[in-house]
Image (tube, rainbow, N blue to C red):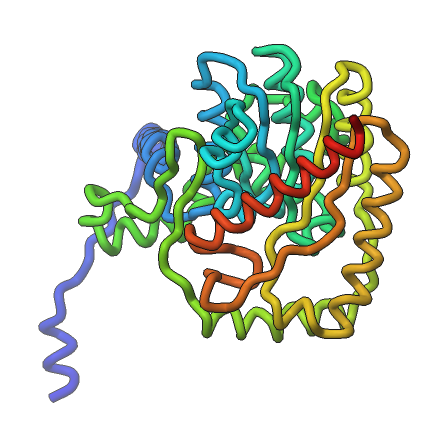
Length: 345
């Protein structure tokens, strides 16, 4: 019976292939991959499911689309993206401002590069506010994220502080930047699995005209879970300012002194129960002392040392605020800035 069934199975007939057919088949497959990769790159630039990639690109595009200079440039990471409300700054200080904050893994390097590009386009801002989470200062360059900057190839050598990339890192950056079939395979896989999403962009990826991302929904359970993660981090690590962040800070200070504008460094908002923990305070104090030292070296750099804490009901995670709390945080920062300005006068 088994033999009879096997005899009934269809037999594949493999014809010998000619060299020309083989080459044309390979060439056709290669061209298809190039076209598919190009289409994916164009689509994912505006419709990626990766919030970090989208935010980096969008904040740089806001800088490029800006038509006129502003008085205050707001730089930093995603805690600042959701935490510093430009309209409040504008009203209280009678100024204009824009929020260009991206994500922590872009380091203060992104702040320095944005500041340099801004000066090239508009001249010198009157003031710069820089806000980072406590654990961004120890990080080094993430090449996958660096590749997402919408700048001309070679920008890492053209802007200060520059980054020296070896052949391997340059190749990785090229792949991450130009081959989304590899670098954004999860996003592509999601869109292929759920093609309807291609026509329904995630509405949480939305910024106000001034660059602020408004977040309304608190997540107290996640804030509490993150507290445990952060406490584990500070228990196992000593604070250390990374080389890239150090060079970026020094370059920002040099620009401030050269062009006579003020730079205000500030801590991100912090979950109150996290800040109360002894291990966190030990780590955080070392960060405060380090940033104090850098501010003391310059007549144009000021550090807002005191942390501003919030309850978990006011937060999305341990350093990201919902909009109502962001307004409180912004007002407190402005009060600290006004105190510094009064003392200086």
